[in-house]
Length: 159
Image 1 (cartoon, rainbow, N blue to C red):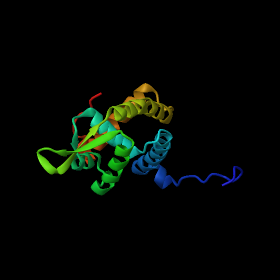
Image 2 (image 1 turned 120 degrees about the vertical axis):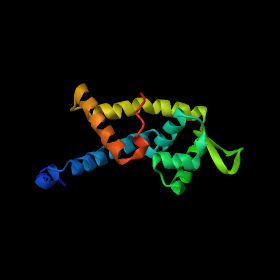
Image 3 (image 1 turned 120 degrees about the horizontal axis):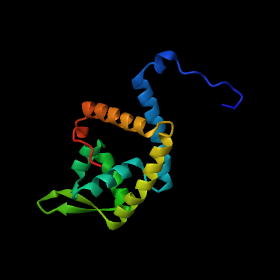
Image 4 (image 1 turned 30 degrees about the vertical axis):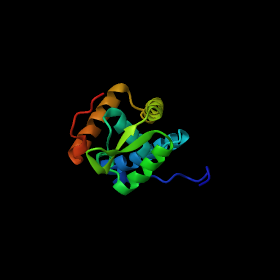
C-alpha cells in the first residue's frame, strides 16, 4: 500500500473484542521479538529452551517439549540447532538409556545472558505507551489469564 492511500479502520465489532485485541497485539509482539532474535542468531524456541535450562538442572527432551508447549518432533530440530551452535549438549540418561538429558553449556549461558538485555529493550519499546503502574497491572492481568487457561502458568512467577 502506498502512503497516500487511506488506512482502513478496524471494524467496531473487533475493536470491542478483548480477545481480538490480545490476538492482534500478540502477533505484533511476536513479529518484533522474532526479528530481534534473528539479529542475535536465535529464534523464539531457542530462547525458551535456553531460559528453561538456565533456570534448572539438565532435563529430558520430552520434559522440555511439554513445559514449553513445543511439539516433540519440532523440539528435536531445535535441539539439533542449539547443539550445533554449542549452546546445549545432550547425553544419554544413565538411569534410562532411551532418554536424552539436555543441559546448557557455558556458551549457551552467555547467549541467554546476552538476550536478557535485548528482551528488556523489546519489552520497554513495546510497552512504551504504558507507565510503570499500567505495566504492572497489565502483567498481573495477563498472568491471571495465563494461569486460568494453561496449568503450566499455575506456579507463581519468581523474579
